[in-house]
Image: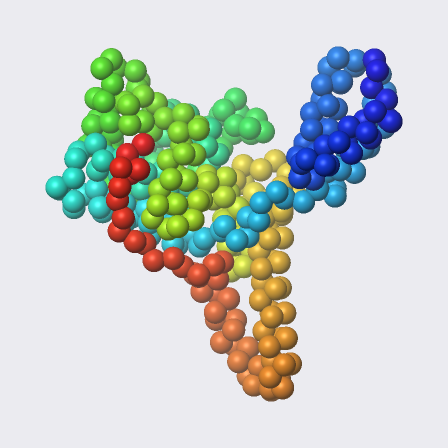
Length: 316
């Protein structure tokens, strides 16, 4: 085995010339996993140490803080899309079915933020179950990333949406395929086939970019939930861990720290402004109003009006 410390450090230097720090850390982690399979009897502690150091110093390649939107804004978009499907009768049945599907999908992402893979693997009667008056999302350990089962009740308001989609809009999408291939898959593509994880990501990104001017991926929904809890109800931010299905709270806390950073930055900016204005007494008097603003639904980011725009890109 010709993998030495000197060669790995040279490789790291080469990667740094062309890649972001998070990419460099990921490449070395891949190397650690590969050599562990190829040479399991060799002591690779030194290589794991390099990988750990790179992981600690790596920074995100993208600024997720600037991309987040309030869940309320996204849920408003979801309901607007479904209402559009129900009311705009002059539009083709296919486009209206896609509007309703995308609106319902965004609503589900707002409710418990499943991974795109789990969205794509939602099966009627299995991972989506009717229990009494409510619908539940239920995935066994074999269907989750960390092999931990997930069971989440969806809000009561979702019942009418889900049943409208099942009774009316899903059949319209299923018949887009010449042969019956959809089975019991819940989410159906424009071509009448089960929607793939990549298809879920493309659909959600496209509709949020088109309607809100911001590309919100399914994974960003998983950051929005704990961030909003951290800002509005920090005492219960731990609720995000079981909701997101994280095995380790430290994973959830990464998003929690994002919320605390946003909150701390806001407080610091207001303090600096009060010092510059020389009106600290007025700043103290305004503190209750500032706290009220922190509890506003738009605390994450200014709400973006939901514009009514449609184009050929509506159809995916």
